[in-house]
Image 1: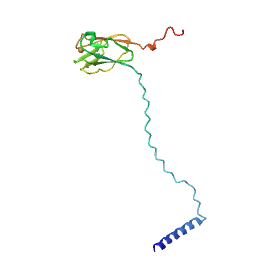
Image 2 (image 1 turned 60 degrees about the horizontal axis):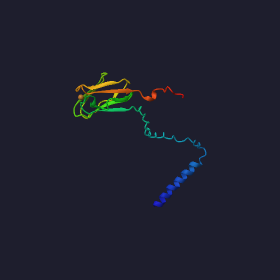
Image 3 (image 1 turned 30 degrees about the vertical axis):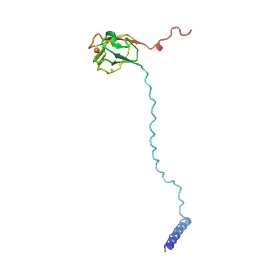
Image 4 (image 1 turned 60 degrees about the vertical axis):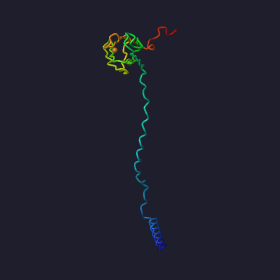
Length: 157
Ligand SMILES: [Cu+2]
């Protein structure tokens, strides 16, 4: 029973196929490619990490506050820093200090262990600084221009 049913189905299929292929009047199916589905958008590759533009390596000088001893309150002192670099004060003492530059720049309060914001050195002129709480605490920043920018007067020999 089962066998005969399958045979009948196969025979019908063969008959249909033969009938279809034998029909000469059927317009030849133009070879229109089935509309290919739009290719799935490739997952955007992870953006290559842009090479971090290394900021001009401006150096930073850390001045330690080590006590209340006049010019010896700071180390190093004087502070030698090139123009374009920055200076920070780190309070290594056990009491609050408040550093102010003689040009009016207020570095701010520094609790024990704290480090100040960075102050940019914008001039090669020396500028003093002191602690507003302990006026005896004084120091100096000696700015300097980078040596590479000064032309060599003996160049050419
Ligand atoms: Cu102080």
